[in-house]
Image 1 (spheres, chains in turn yellow, blue):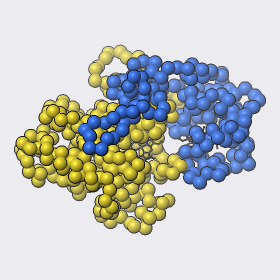
Image 2 (image 1 turned 180 degrees about the vertical axis):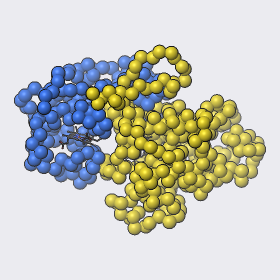
Image 3 (image 1 turned 120 degrees about the vertical axis):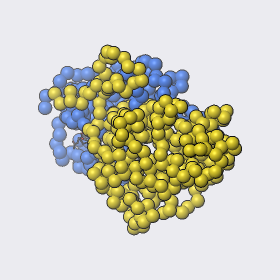
Image 4 (image 1 turned 120 degrees about the horizontal axis):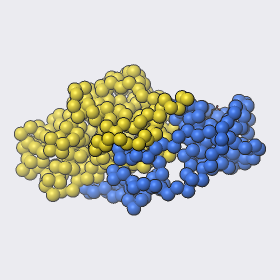
Length: 300
Length: 168
C-alpha cells in the first residue's frame, strides 16, 4: 500500500538521550525538497529570487501590484525600499539604550562572541551575520536571541528570547551588519550541519490538527493563496528578523514559528526550544549570501 | 468505488487534550495552550491562553512520542441526508482558506476551485471520504483529514457533501 511509504520512523537520533529500543511511532512527512544552503537556491524552488535578489533595486511596478508583489518575497517592506518610520525604529533606539547599560564594562560584547569584547561598537559589525553558531559555553548551537538572553542573565538581567527588549537588542546588534551577507557554515561536518539537517526534517514533519508541515505551504504552495495571504518562498526570510509587525508588534523568528504553528492549529513550542533553533538554522542557511536588513516591517 | 469498514470518531472527540504529559518545551501551562504576548519595553514575555486547545495533536517537539492518526477509510451509509445550508456555513469556516467557493472575494487557490461543483457528478461517498480523510486518495495531500482528526462529525461532513453537490 502506498501509505506505508510515508510511514517513516521518527528517528531517535533526534532526541538528546539515546535509548536503545523505542516503539515505532507513526509520523508523516511532506515530500522532501532539495534545498541549497544558499539564498540563490530559491531559483530551483520558486524562482522568485530573480525579483528580490537585489534589495536596493526592487521593481516599483511589481511592488504596487497586489497580485504580483509576493514575487518580491515582501522585500519591499525592508529598507532601503521602505523609508517609513515604524515601530522597528523605536525598537532600535530601545536596543541601543539597553546595550549601553549591559555593556558598560564591555563584557556583554565579549559574551556575545565579539573578539576582544570591549565597549566600541565598531566590532559588532558582522556579528549577526554569523548566527546561529556553536557555543562552547552552552554546548550547543544557539541563535542570537538565545545568546542575548544568556549573556544578559550573567549580569542578572532578564531578557527572555522573544520579549520586546530581547528583540530590540537583537535588532540593534543586527543593524551593525546591515548590508552584510548572512554567512553560516552548514556544509562542514559538525553540530551546525547536524542542526541544519534536523531543521530540514522538521520543516517537512507534519503536525497539529490539520497535519501540515511547514513545507506544505512554504515549499509546495508558494505563490498560491490562502484567502488574502499569498505564500512566499522560505529562502531569504531569516535576513530581516526580528521584524516589526504592524498587526503584532516586534517579532523574533522563533515567535514567527509560534504564529505559523498556532495559525495552523499546531501546539506551539517555546522560543529558544531545540526544534525552533534547528528550524532557525535551516532557515538562516537558506538566507546565506543575502544581506541583513533591519529594521524591517511586515503586514501580516 | 468500494469503501472499507466504518470508523467511529467518538474516541477522538472525547479524548482529553493531553493524554500524556505535554513536552516540556511546548507552550502549555496547566494543560492549556498558551500564546505569547509582547510587552513594550519589557524583558519578559507574557503568556495568555490561546483561543483553542491544541494539545490533542502531535507537535514538533523532539520529546513528543505521540503518533499521527493514520489514514482511515470511511464508508458513508446512504442516504446522504445532508443540510446544504448548514454545509455552506461549515464550508465558509473550514474550506474557504484553500478552495474558491461561489461568492468569495478572496479566493483561495491552494485547493481546487469549487465553482459549479455539481458538474463533476462525483458519488456522495467519494466526496465524503475526501473530506473525512483525503490521504486515502493522495498520501501527500495538504488537505486536512477532518474526520480522522476529529475536527468534523459525521453529520457535518454529510452537510458539506450536500452543499458541494448543490453548487450548480
